[in-house]
Length: 434
Image (cartoon, rainbow, N blue to C red):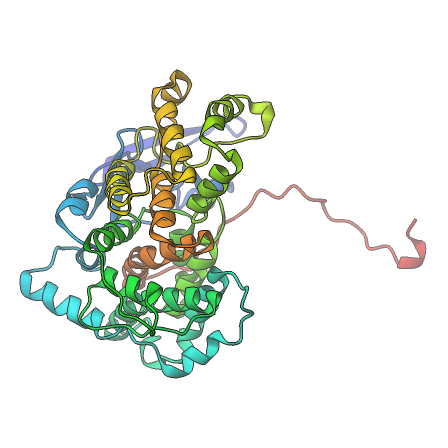
């Protein structure tokens, strides 16, 4: 809220002028300086590459305090949600703002469950990709194509169509992700089963084959659900900001989510847990961990420890604590404590948590470090990791899309720039150019 008495004074000594910038308070977190009229009042733009000090929107969905290691969805701590809730209930919370009643949750879960099938013609879309196509390339293309199949949920001005689009995206994303995997390994697609939970269904569609029955492991299903929950939303990260920017042009919801998937694909964002596994393979052996840690401390070595530290969190990532517990449960269930790659990860974690260098710089293992280990242990190929991230983050993306699309006066995003190219030049005919 804006306090009429609260403002920041900016002095332009060159022009001998002062400008008052309103100071706005959120419900929690730091105040923000309102610069919406800054250009009109001063004739200048602000300059903030990476938007590290710029609030791009107002949102009621997720709050992060990186210094204190706090993550909340609609006011609920991520620790409580991970312990007491599940992914679909958390998705409902993100979209609708409140936890559902028992009846509302039952209806919500049933509604999502009974929309997990995809249009049969969409299945033919997969065959247009090469067999060795990256699953994220397939997912990005297929999700973008959904708008060609579901014309009755692309009008963002219709609240009912907005809601239907959100339901379809959350329901169909596991099916699309599983199909992308199946296509990459040359196995037949497996259709969803309405008797299974969200996470169970995804594991069933991913790992079952028609030749034999598939038995759901409840510990692995719970771990999968928790991975989805912990990745459901994370405030204005690159992919969420991309979804909002695409949405500001009034693009249809499927195109907006496809844009988010494309942004998430980058190794600095959704590909981080894949980078963790690639780093572990580069280290090679448990005995090499000590040397790898030394190299990581040497800036000139070019070697980085992936999965440590975070752009936002300057304390322990609250999701990582939960993911570590989940990691231990999965490894114990599968009896994989002696897997060579996982032994490297465990030794690396042990050294990093005790090393003064990492402690002083607050380079704690983050959620990507543990999620990569879990997913590999469960049998997911490394190139599918980011598709699982996209599957989970769809809940947050559609929540932000819904929030932005319901604004009475949504403005198209139009960042400005600091131009440093040539000033006006005269055109020289080609025959006179040196």
